[in-house]
Amino acid sequence: MDFHKFTIKELSRILQKKEISSLDLCNFFLDRIRNIDSKLKTCISVFEEEAKKQAILADKMIANGEKGELIGIPYLVKDNMLVKGFKTTAASKMLENYIAPYDATVIKRLKDSGAVLLGKTNMDEFAHGASTENSAFFVTKNPWDLERVPGGSSGGSASAVSAGLCVFALGSDTGGSIRQPASFCGVSGLKPSYSRVSRFGLISMTSSTDVIGPIAKSVEDVAMVMKVISGFDENDLSSANLDVEDYLKNINKSIKGLKIGVVKEFVDSLDEKFKEVINQAILTFENLGAKIKFISLPYNKYAGPVYYIITPSEISSNLARLDGIRYGFSADYKSKGSSAENLNELYLNNRGQSFGPEVKRRIMLGTYTLSSGYFDAYYKKAMAVREKIEQEFNDVFSEVDVILTPTSPHVAFKIGEKINDPVKMYLEDIFVTGPSLSGLPAISIPAGFVDNLPLGIQIFANKFKEDLVLNLANNFQSKTDFHKKSPDIN
Amino acid sequence: MEISKNEIEKIAFLARLDLNEVEKEKYQIQLANILNFVDSLKELDVSNSEVLGLANDFENQLREDEVVDCDQEEREIAIGQSAEREAGQIKVKRVL
Image (cartoon, rainbow over all chains, first blue to last red):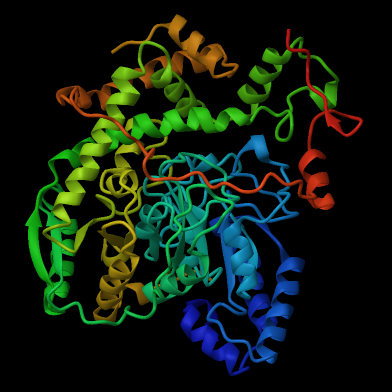
């Protein structure tokens, strides 16, 4: 059976009917990882024994008559989320041997729901990047074309879901890191509203925009995972103390009469082939009864520059804790005894020798923009413009229910194509940073193919309107089959 | 926008990053390029806006000041990864 092409919904039905055991399903995916992952390099670690133990527990839950969509479903998680007793590396030499002392809240919730964790996926080091080429360990490949990047920073998670190495995966999104790889790999990925999903146990990057979200084969699957991981957590100060909707309840509702805003200048900026994909998507939504309204977001062109001031600033502060003293890379302490003369020298060595080029670049940039004499010109200015961008979205949402944009201006690019030009890489985020800076829920779903490579569209709404985003996206998938296509990799 | 080598060295020290000469030269160029990229913000006049940031979005979450026992296994993993330990404490280099 092609279990790797099945959705959570389909597998859950088979598991509940006891047509297959969770342990057999777990072994099926472990075999697949063993056989295929040497080509794709999606996983940093695989927990064979632990996964089997969890699968046996899931089988007991099923035998006891417990219900729940995720019982016995195998998944992978980006390696910046803590799993107790296992390595959490953030794809950095700094944390290469770091063992997590506790479970992230999302991991705990998924464990309680009966999902089976197979391992941890590759990413750009500390989630800094848009191609997964910044991993300190290896480059992950796109399953649609092994010479291309899977996107990033959650590239390992998106590639693994697309290739059927797991049923769903968790990613994190700070400025597009779930949506852009979802677009490049032809899968569905949701960046929830800021503060909707607990970040306790997520390695911080940009605390004012970081979120955890699901990557899966369908919008319905995304909703099933969201149901489990969303909601208030007293361990996360920023966690929203709001009721969580049943994301499946309204997912099939008609979208007749809903107003979709299409950003004119975004579509105009695209090459013809990509424009065609967006126009087809617009037509699909019109056929479903939605009303299209062309809108303009003049402040949004500043989202990239704002993002690349605020993000490095927060990174320089968040990554200051990584000094190799309490944990992490230690340059000369252990092996050669105490060769550093003083504490400063120790910091300099531990950090200088273990951080990769993009991490250093962002820390340097952030230190600069926060430093005396530049703070007002850069950081404070960026924060003021950020509020303008947010206000602009607020205004637009009084006229339309959701906004539709391309996820990325193009399909997956070649490995090595942009790695030496940071500004080019930063321009990857052009359509996705706006919703991040404003904390809005945004999904990327497959909307077509250009030159045999998948391309996604992004749908986003006002804060905490995940149900609306999922409803629109699910209606789109009821009329299209782009999300059902999978790469030929065995 | 240009950044001098001196400035790069100053920032690198503030950030506690030991950089070699090749890195210094590379970041001198790349940081200047990135700052040019973000320079479009200069077109905007936001001098009248008051920046609140996320200050209004959160409330402090308070709890009773009680001693809660720490899970011993968790504690051991957490402090067992330090470079040097002495008597259950993490040992660091002299500060001055």
